[in-house]
Each structure stands twice: as structure tokens, then as C-alpha cells.
Length: 113
Image (cartoon, rainbow, N blue to C red; front, side, top):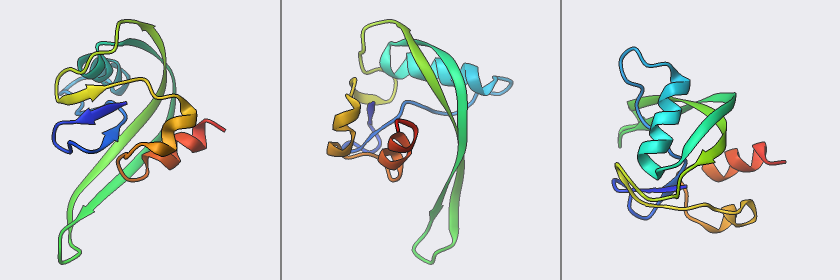
């Protein structure tokens, strides 16, 4: 998990923007490495998540589509990097006890059943 510098009290899964011409899987591997110093390999695609942010008048301000993958640890010592204030391994039994971005806890729990 990473604690974002833009939302200092919130933890989330590592991630970020896909660079022009970059495959989604490669972007996921790169973002995990940049934010956590961990090297992973992608196991499988899980799903696309729509994140829709509205303004005070309920008009859509931003619409993000997140491609979520499961991965396997290969190497590296977890260290916060890039835009992360902190990074750490979180045991699945502790997921419900940390403040995460909206929907992240439920998403993780759905895939860990």
C-alpha cells in the first residue's frame, strides 16, 4: 500500500498514469516500482474500475478508468518513492483498519475471498 502525497492521510494501491504508447500491464509494473521500489510480475487482469468525481453542483469534474491487476512480488525492499509519502506491506487481516481511498477496502476484500 502507498500513502499518497496529494492525500496525506489516505492509503491506496500503487498506480498512476499510462504513458503514451505504454501497455497497461507495463504501466502497472512501472508504477509499483516507482512508488514502492518493489519489482513485480503481473499475474492477471482483474477488472476496470470507474472513478467519477463530481463538483459541488454534481457535474462530472473528472472520470478515471482504473485497470486493476494482481501481481506477484519478485524482488526489492519496500521504500516510498515517486509521489508516495510512505509505502508498506499490509496483511490482509489489517486492511479494514487503515484509511484507504473510497472503495479500495471493499475491492481488495472481494478479491481475497
